[in-house]
Image (cartoon, rainbow, N blue to C red; front, side, top):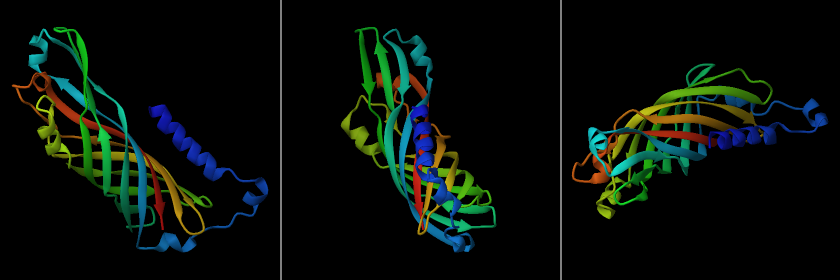
Length: 235
């Protein structure tokens, strides 16, 4: 899956960079006034690949029925807005609130009776990342940048999951974490096209352990993990 997202970024770069040689030779600098703007806005479209970092409980070691509990990677998508404030020539402050549709599923293998079970832990997150953006000088109509920041997530689907399936491991409504990433900015005549890859990982334990639920009792700790490929369109 990491290879798929990496290939998507490479494809985006190829599409933007590929031009006939005669056109490249006559290339003009686009949006020269943009670098002096104190702030600007944009929209974000993204694909995510998410799962849990999981730690089994002492009950799992003692249980002779559930033999395996593992997280599964699944795909989802993000929709968001972007606000960028210029701090200096090389640093920006970026706020990128997003609506995240993600699924972090759990795989169980049981011995008595012999069966394999997948518990679908679907989330609809309101994510609020605040990031510092470090950007290079422009190279023609291109720029490279990196980002680092913190995020706060609110899971709109947490309570719905609890009502729907009493046997489903329960997830906390809120989470917090960090984000690290890198991307490119390509300047066109009227907008900026920015492909970006980042990791967005939770630091808190989102699992609400319930010793009365066998699928929950064998899990001690779960932390969210997400790999994101984004396209930002900025004005």
